[in-house]
Image 1 (cartoon, one colour):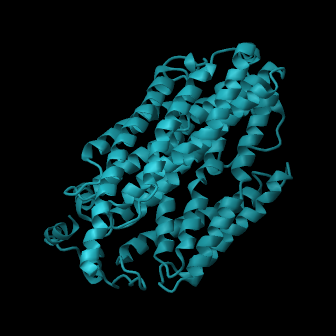
Image 2 (cartoon, rainbow over the protein chains, first blue to last red):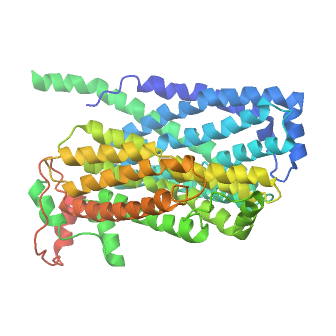
Length: 245
Length: 282
């Protein structure tokens, strides 16, 4: 029996993190009404120079900077579940381990550029626009690792023993749907307005709602497994001792 | 299932050749996880060549020493190719991970400490970021707003190509870790000559460093030494490990001793085999 002590603590960091993430999301004035890529350099500079926005941008991005990486331990719990699956090799858990640092890292780069845009609001508007563009583009195109982790989880479930599955089949289909919902955001550079633009229906709303739903659903199925595994572990040692005796 | 039985069943199977064969292997092949990783690697490098060499024309890289106006016109020439090509990269870049996982698995199969496999996995997991994603995002930012100040477009251009050509440590240390594991290995997972080829790949990361200093000549970021020799070595190295990993999967017996050789003259796969395999694989 693999040791699972402490997994419950890691699991329950998620609701705390989620509250912080949601607060930071609504604190950043650029997300509530997502900033349009068709804004002129002057409009972008004015947005960052506006005293009502400036502090909110800084504090929200500092919060994200602190707590965005908090997703990694949660993802690692999913890796632990994949290790329990009836696979012949560790290939799937290696793939997922490789994936999980990617999303937060790319998000961190976006975060840095948004903070850079606020650091010297008096800088030339073209420079503020450049930092804003880099922030939004890193944020919106940060999908490769998220698409990857969804598809890897789906494949891992498919390759598991269907008679004693760690996750049920619908979790695999759900992950494939989430991966598909994230694909349009990859092409956001093609449009400055419309659904593909970084503030558009596909690249902003569909992508971010898919990520939020993914976090909620996966944490529920993960939580059920962690608790079930713990309950099994509690009865396990007794049986083992009996055998040893 | 014994190791012997696996070899006997899996060796003649090999990679799928026909559509029906693919479906069958997908369900029953005991090595399907390894083949998934191998095919992902092949698909990834094909996408890489199509996007970087053909669609975006970022390979070979543009000249490093151009006036602002020429840099702007470089973007103007293939704006659509850049944005669609990089969109494809953003959608598919995670295909690098099964490839890294497979290489980490090859090291895990060797008679060396797991530390080598984990080091390789960690080092290469984020390699896609400096290895291509920075370039893709930064050039997309430059291409999406052609009206931007030419000096800023030039800055993005330098950022993109220097991050791409001039990020060296991941590939340097990663290759050396793999090399050391191969040279120490007693399980004959990969041939020793490939260990030394890793050293060649690592050395290309040393000769590319002058790209940070020179603006013209053989040592600049698209120069004969910094780019062309680098790319030839990388091409030979990548083709070599694709073939060697394929053979490794065919030889894999899921044991932890020396990897058995492939039979000299493999027999044709008997038609009745699926029945035997499905009973063991399911």
